[in-house]
Length: 610
Image (cartoon, rainbow, N blue to C red; front, side):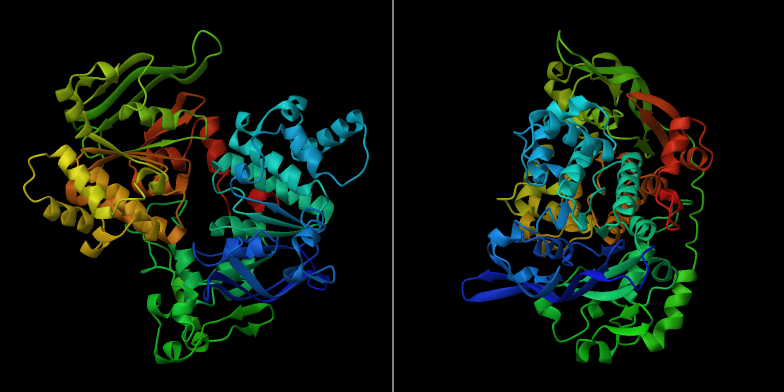
């Protein structure tokens, strides 16, 4: 933990970011104050639209040309916000490093990894041998001892390896501050733990300050000394991690904490935060969270409350904190009530039946075995989980069930139809299969036509699966209602919808076929925790109301516990353990399952050896 008396290495005051469009402007970040000390880890948490990533880009001089930053950000005696691009080149990398969620956005796909890191090293003349030795030393620091990685391109590496190379490049010029923007969000739990352990170790070795941006509160509490909670472009609460976890002093922070799915038990219904994050300009004259807050009163809407210090190191922007603190404490201490057992038995009609299925990619040359003798069943009305790390084969199996891939060996029956080769199926069988199994993908934006309205997309799905439907418009309205959207949303396009709303549209489109099974491939992994809770509750209600079954593919064990009754654990293309979800997660038998459970974040920091 950083000592409170250490000097600040970065001081930010009244940081504002605006989108400039000719004579008009729109506020995106509405006045951020932030202090980071040497050796300290500061967390920034909040939903999408809160200004987290824009703050990171402003502090590294990487804002788009139509965005402007004002205020003050003092680093080594210089105001970063006044620097020219030429001056930024003396700061970016050398003074402040940046690691992004997707290293592809920072690493050139046309350069070999060794050249990427060599280019990032401090300037100076080096022989080829000396430079290669220095690059290897940097790779070893991030846990890569295989020298051949230097000669590979980033697309030839796994997600975890790419992120390690990205960290090595960000650290190459020995920055005193590292900003990590969602560095582990796209990774499975074991790789996430490895990357965060790596960052913790390097930070301790170098005495470097770290700003960690994440929407995962468990990760923030495990990694960070202090946490800043962002909402609608401003800071609504600041506190030491343990204190903030034990007693949030702002209703928004409490809402985020309550939305986290429990790791150790299943609940009847996840807590959600109603509504969505507003634009800063729309709430400039009031508490930005008032419209979503159960404790809102006239004082909250009459003026924007300033953030103020309640005790040493504890700040909140809640105008009523003195009145509602006891209620917040009581709400935080309430333990979510476990859901009653469903009395689940695997005795229904089997819809998906895989027996000793194998899938091999590649031709006569190098072959990759993605699935090796996998046997999985999904029955009528069942919710079945498929968990494992990236590369375990779970997504490959999901793609087999909807015809995006065909099996190499074994037997795969869907609703009694042999789907060994999807291309050889009769048209009638294909239609029946499309009305049996539908898929919901991780990124709804990439699966929706950005040029078409929501109503057009749903109408196309309705007419495709039921050409004789007399009232397409009525059916579109029913689909929107079934996923909690309004008829007015039919006129909107995907780009103007929030991530949660887009995923609801994707689910509605899948429901147009009236499927018996929905295959959800990491369907909530890219969503904020509050929106994630809304979608998980939606899936549960659809199952209860319509009897839909699920094949739920995920790497998050807290999520799989909430929505499934039976799980299969996959590793390296094989099923290593299966059984009732609670039985497997409460008492895992296979060493791999035990490893997954031990990789789940714990707020006490012991998870990372802190």
